[in-house]
Amino acid sequence: MASITTRVKQHRDRLRRAGLRPIQIWVPDTRAEGFLDECRKQSLLVASADKDDAELSEMMENALTDIEGWE
Image 1 (spheres, rainbow, N blue to C red):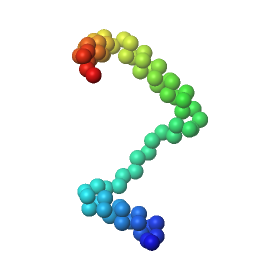
Image 2 (image 1 turned 135 degrees about the horizontal axis):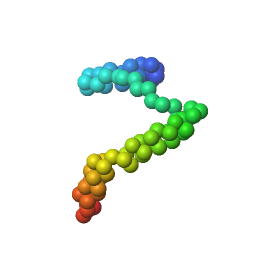
Image 3 (image 1 turned 135 degrees about the vertical axis):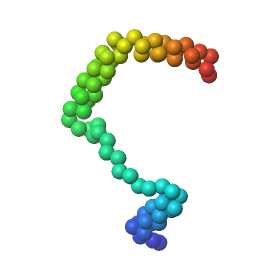
Image 4 (image 1 turned 90 degrees about the vertical axis):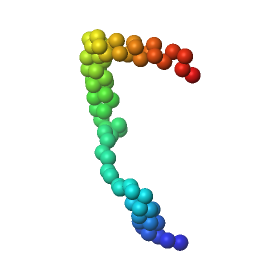
């Protein structure tokens, strides 16, 4: 049986031949201290801004009426 290193290399080589390439994505650590507080703060800011945006409200209302009858 091939070593784990060999199998990983073969897998990556197959993906590259398929036209893919590896990338690394960094995302917020949801376990970090203060993460929930920051989410709440940003959510309240967005909600406050959206509340005063008449065009957004109209667009949302139009979107809701557009989905009637969907199953």
